[in-house]
Image (cartoon, rainbow, N blue to C red; front, side, top):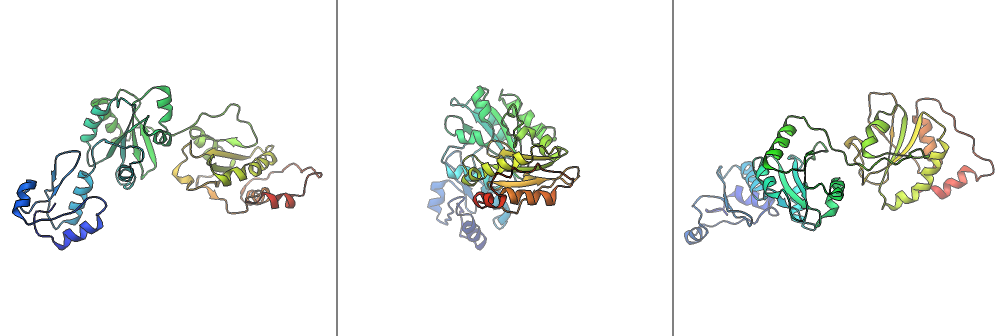
Length: 339
């Protein structure tokens, strides 16, 4: 609420931030008295805390915008399943990292978490998830394994701009332990957390299974030419591709220098450089080069199309075993295999 006549700057900002807050102005002294605001002031009224008063200049649109964005968000807010307003706040701004508490139905550690989050207000967007309310969020962030193991609460930092996450090792969520965790983050002393399934044992099928924990060693630094499919179990196109991709894996099974691989990208983290934006995503990783940027597959999704792409991009000679002549011609099979 602006306790004065509206200015052009005020009206313009109100128009651009209409979804962030309800904007109003008044010059009526009786209204100002009822609202307990001073003439010429800007006050943000909130349901979760006492009103916040803007201390900057009225014509400084950037400062006023920053004030509204910071003060309208509750520190350590409850990110409830289905609450689109809360979810939007968390994911709309990648300039600030997220600080999350993943806790149980009793909300263990919440008071201390909020106290620690208050100390970094303005630097982080903070909130908490409850396992019994929003299990999908736990799965998305890889926190379901801690929920399943009964080792909640856990604190996680998500740097959306860098596409990296960090998890506090201890589940003793106290103001001091969270503060120490934040200090380590600021000092660049934390290891990146990778959401990962367990690697299957054995893992020697025609299509190698990649998980989050093995991506670096078995894809980026494998010392081999790796053709990787990032898929989602629910994806219809991925299901159609599966038998074709398995056949490709069988044809390359005896080629030691080439790996045909796949990864469930909903259950495992891939680096941002992998560029997984949809499913299936097919990437080719070169062997023995400093440039680890993958090549996008842009051919036909058939065995013939895959083989043509690999022949063009694999930089070392290889030989495939000749197919059984009794089998259907490759061209005939491809007509049925193409997606």
